[in-house]
Amino acid sequence: MERQVRGISCVWDAALLTPHNAVPLGPRKARRAGDRITWYPRACRSCVAIAAVTQLAIHTAACPTCQSEDADPCDTARALNRLFREYPR
Image 1 (cartoon, rainbow, N blue to C red):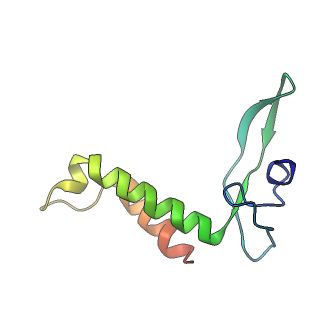
Image 2 (cartoon, rainbow, N blue to C red; image 1 turned 120 degrees about the horizontal axis):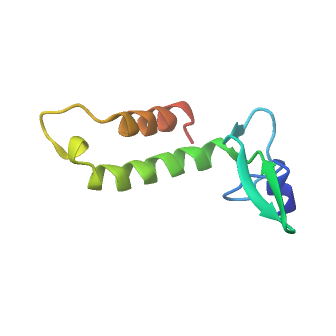
């Protein structure tokens, strides 16, 4: 867990991260030992792709815009598609 908090390991599968495979996930606020901290999680490219496609499936099942045959995908679906394409496994 400590390695994941420090950004050394992937937050999802604990794989060792390098400058070439690490994807920053943005700052997060949390409580640790009663203190409020900011941490900067990172993930490996393959976990980001898996998370994006998983969330895309969940999203499109519930999004009326994405379910419409006549409409383009919504902004959320486009962003998740972009993530999946940007970080292939």
